[in-house]
Length: 402
Image 1 (cartoon, rainbow, N blue to C red):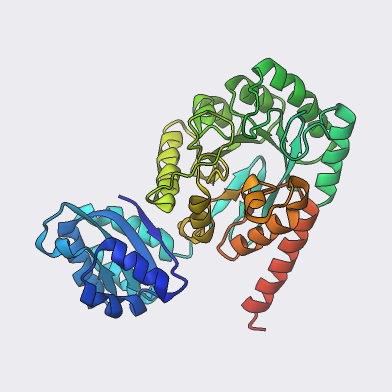
Image 2: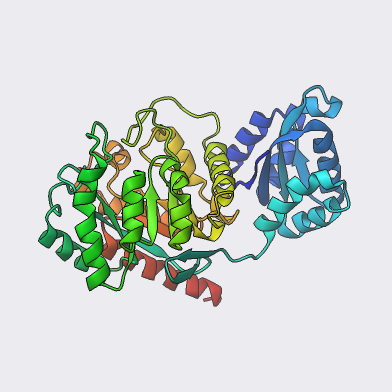
């Protein structure tokens, strides 16, 4: 069962969600206004539980939408939409604690959502508070065939100049990649990838006071990079590389970005026309399951970041849905890294070439900041760091009541 908050921006969205749950038609006009408060969706709840949940929410001054068949327990499971102010949800949580312990699977995630818990993230020897800190990963591709800047920085001198430029212009972390993941790209051997990235990792470690991320999924490259001083592994394989090297990651005190990859063709990017039934739930389930799997291998959740994998098996419609609902993850204290920079998704929407997409990518990033996203992977560290400064100044005015 998944439990996550959902933000409904207008009445049309509220009605669409209520209809998807299959509530009684007469209740649509009653429930839709109530939904535009604090909305938390519980997926696949036992119908016997759903009726208790609805009664308890009503008693607290809120409401819960359940399927019409749930009243007679004609089906085993139903989705449930909790609707109420934060105080209502708090009252509901308190009351549910007096219910049998089986309801803890609902209470625990709800407490995270409505609580004021600060999400602390550790990368290398630095600690980030994602309630206020931003993290920009500056992309440094040392490849001849990357979709945006292939061949520009694949020799030592140009790579080091670009590293210095990115760091001087807002990058908190250098994300070094030695293999292109663009559609139809050719897989390179671990040996070739090591030849590309290791001299740069070692030189960055020697010459700059910077955190280092390595964009790879190959165990051999992960292990060598960690030994050379990498602090973060950016794994596009859906976590396979991180899982297989978890022991080494823990031993080096490193962190990981685990990207959801729905592409059947491995590490390369792709876009599909097949739409997921529930893109938000799919990514949420991915984050929860990978956190569990990696925690069993000793990787602490404060060292895990998740990437929805834009351009890796999601349709454009699914990408739209995920980007509009990042609040579902950030409000659940899931650290999300968004890598929208220069993606073909932007090109399909605008007709812009890769080098012309920075402004649009930064605009998307600004909208995601309003949903709580604090980690971005970008080619344009200067532009995005300026936007972060602007966003922080606005938030400071809002916090002070100006």
